[in-house]
Image (cartoon, rainbow, N blue to C red; front, side):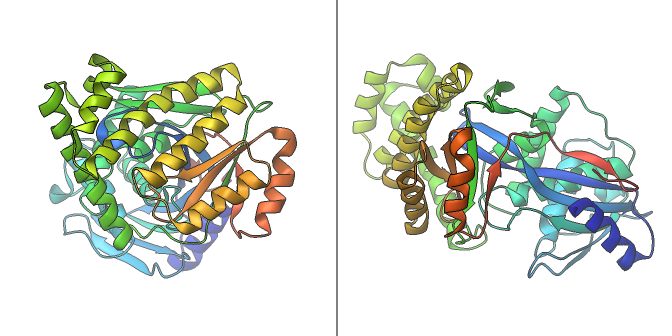
Length: 397
């Protein structure tokens, strides 16, 4: 068990027992890609797989964290200092987000306690399943715990997700708050329809008798620290430019949510045609994907797997053609899954490498998973699961 492994390795390294294990899940986004930073709803769910951070408080603001993750090394820094290189920058971002939001009553520059830690993972790094944001959330929960401030209601968690998203943008890509929100708010058996303007989390049950999801990693990492990250940030800027062009054409509307709420589809399509390429394609994806989110939530509620599969297929085509964030490896994986009987498939996460989410029916899931595992080393059932939490070090579960 990964929690037990984190506890054991913590004891081997630090010769003491940790006080707890901070778990944060990865996520699959069913639909709604590249929408959160536009202020538009998305439809992800938390995974069983995630990150396990065994921790013990220190009496200073230093963080020392080791891991068995390939190439990760050691994080050793003070919260009051600038972000360190490597995976430690995500732990530092957690402290910065807590400080900026006033969660601990006093910021790291005035000295709240750090921790010693050991990190284990059941998510492949750079797989598009939110391992980086899971680390931010796991570290934030650990920092709250060692500073004796952990119990939060849903309204607090929504605000915490936004603060952590802002802090993560300081060390990584300029994304939205989907990953942090689903890690903190995930619910077993449900997807969450996450809205950001204003913030709201709405549970959408996923009937296990009608829907089965698989997560499949292409094996090609989504390198957010390199070329993939630069392309992602360019898409964020293009989305802003497209919005500005649409509002020049159609009038100020309060961002993308206002455009969709105040203008009929035909008027928006006319406004999109006024944009230069590639901004017209970017806007086309954003506006059509936003509509697919609502339709997908409806399909889940009425148990219509065929309709949901078609929406996944449409989403992937839009991400490939209009948003240009798919890759040959992702397109090949999606085609393979469909050819072998999937109801639908699409890249999940930002694309530019990483993973796909595959939809099938429960009676076909095992056979399809076995088939895909012949070609892809990392493929597993994606089961809607619960949120980040602190596990006891004595008997982690």
